[in-house]
Image (cartoon, rainbow, N blue to C red; front, top):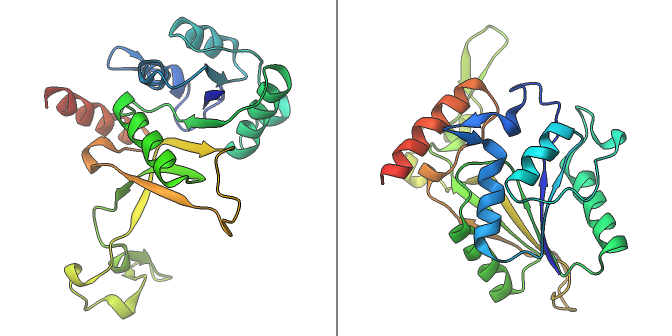
Length: 226
């Protein structure tokens, strides 16, 4: 069995109601659900939520809500990992063995093409995990930080005089999808193999603030035109 798991807590603080807030005409969570459906990879698309309102909207767009998230997994400081583990345990107990799953966040730039690309990469390399990543737009080794006097200084002063093109390239999590293999992993592998699925920067945005939301809408409008 292959399943999609979309965590969607109802108590978002930085952007209230973030997951069901309308993003250019439809709830943000709808983009992830629709991409998962279009990909055709999943036996079940599950939204883990503690909100009846979120549950109704998720079901309307084609997701399943086989359980409501327990109260102890709905707090402000609960990490995503135990939420996903709870969903996996529920599915295993009630529906059977899960061979692999894909964890999604509510993000408008998730596409069925990238879901498929990540899946193929995972299966080709028999990887434990494949996640979308993007290149940092600026060299992080030349980043600045605030000092005690209220000014700024180089966070890595040893690289202050380095040319950008001479510095190594770093990548960040695209905050979109994470394929996980639970069955077909080589028995002799000594450590986990996490493969990167490279994504262009114009398809990557992490929406945590109102400014992020504004930027994301502008980027998405440009993406649609392209």
